[in-house]
Amino acid sequence: MKLIVLALTALVSTCSFGQITFEHGTLKEALEKAKQAKKPLFVDVYATWCGPCKQMAATAFIDPEVSKFYNANFVSLKLDGEKNDGPEVMTKYGINAYPTLLYFDASGNLAGKVVGAMQAKQLLSKGVEIANPESNPVFLARKEYLKSKKKQADLKAYVKVLSDNQHDSLTKYAAEYYQKFPKLNLADPVELVVFKSAEHDYKNPLSIQYLNDEKNLADKDEYLNKINDYFMATYQQAKAANDFEIMKSMVVELFPYLQKCNVPNLPSMDEYLEYVKTQFENQ
Image 1 (cartoon, rainbow, N blue to C red):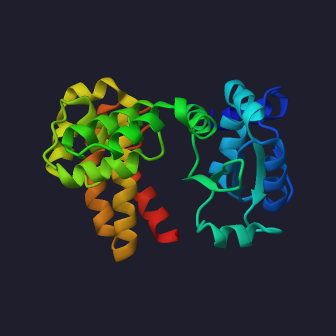
Image 2: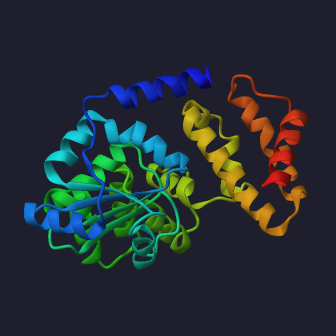
């Protein structure tokens, strides 16, 4: 099945009629072209070996709505971070991960920087924000928040807008909210968003509450995403300590919750532990 999906993705990427039209020169050349066209510049800083970069190229970049908007409102550049002026751009703009997406206004000023791949809806939202800032709900909400007294209600309203628009700043402001107001009410939709974004410890009481609330299983994808978040955070902790037992304890604790999701072809816990151990030792 996985091979079939990959084959279909490749077919879509080669046969799609709608895709972002990218320049392939230097950043300096693209900035000059954008200035002449009086348009902002969108830059996809990628590497040929980067999996998420290829995924964006096969999905978000060929989305009809996204490509139509970007082609009409931006000059776009694909920049290999490891070739030509790529290393210089990486250093100048503090880029250390692929993909990183840069946005410049028509005057050549950096207007936005997104680290990591985005889905089509997110990419479109970010493009609208850069191209038409004064009509964008995130822009308006930011102005409102910055001139507010920054009380809990002010920050909460801003987080809601960021969440509704799948904005890349959500992680930052959700973390700020959680730091200031850690006693979250998971029955509150906005505070649930804050929890999902900012809490990464599966042992935290809020995490235990979330995992054991059967209502959360109604959105199985979100539930699995949160479990995966715990896996990734714990994996990094275990690797830093070079201690597989940290990872093993987490798998033993969380595997029953995976079973609740009726994941197709889910192996036994012993088989999964063996797989995780192999990955841990080989990376």
